Length: 512
Image (tube, rainbow, N blue to C red; front, side, top):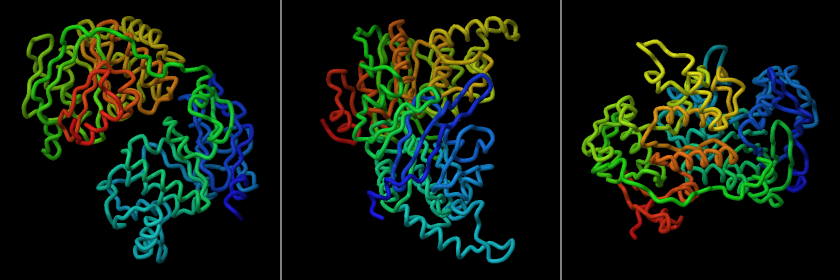
């Protein structure tokens, strides 16, 4: 069969899929298909139904818990669980990798499908040999007995794919696979997906990074509000049209920067040098800068340049300070932890809301007020009426979509979780708000809403410092841009002087 003929032959068909939760229909007659040997992108805003659809496909929601039909290779499937879907050749590579870091690569590749010499006796020789072969298929040159915890995120992603291929997966689902990867690691992964496509493997590619979607996909399906909006070839769907189909409206100004004049210096950082407490290496070296009232200061740089380490250490959340000083409104301050930072008027919205930000089993109200309990307590007793009033105010102001303040935060979409995390920072009434990757993992519609919130904060006089790996975001929203390289401040650029080429030149160690 020729590649062209192969790609016209459907491997997967999902017909009129419905899935209900109490009080809401998450999927409403969704139709989706994937051809043999194609990369089919699935896009939509957070809450559009992508994750629910994949959970139906992968057996997380077994047959009987959804309506509609799944057809794989011409045969109707009624998966009773995840194992049934895996046996049918479906593998899901989640954004948060399901690897055991204390085990070797080979052990992770065959975990749950171990090779045996005899009942209860592992065949290590066979597993090492087969792991070596499958690692070669994904282009990962490591010894199969290397501990997974010793590998970088990009290599761990390849181990996940190797595990899927070792189980003869013919349909790969990749959920935000490049969210934590560097640019070079992303290039490696996309090249691998291209190679798998040429060998007949089908991939469903889920990502908010639309430039990647257009780069790798053959076709694109857009979901909105639990329904299929359209399915078209990538050639027929430019990025502007993808966004319009996702949000149901035009986003004429993706980065709604407002012209403004910055005020006086609020925070002054001088000769800031910080060591990593784990290994003692210098992560931030002799960095000096100032932040002004009523401005957005963007911080750009490649992964590993020290951006996150800089803002976390100033906020007291990480690192061992070796040298440097902070002044807030001209007065020296000493920050030894997040509580002191908050008391001084410095708040941090972390880049990893799931690990370090939100408490998933707490509700929206509790997550919003968690850093401000003293403000809403009297003699150690929480004022529940004040807690509810303030949390409701932030939900209304930020247009956070919640069923109630008592809704567990883990059930919200990524964009709404991010709004809750930002609200927590704002409730501390900061003078300086540090935002580390504020739009990571949220869709374009939610991004624009977050940008509007930031503009409103700046208009009220808050100084905003934004770290972002998305260079268009930094350039589009910042009044000034700092560029970091290998822990040092490589450049400070005005808005008019900051363009992509200039920023990247400094970020890669180039000279003016």
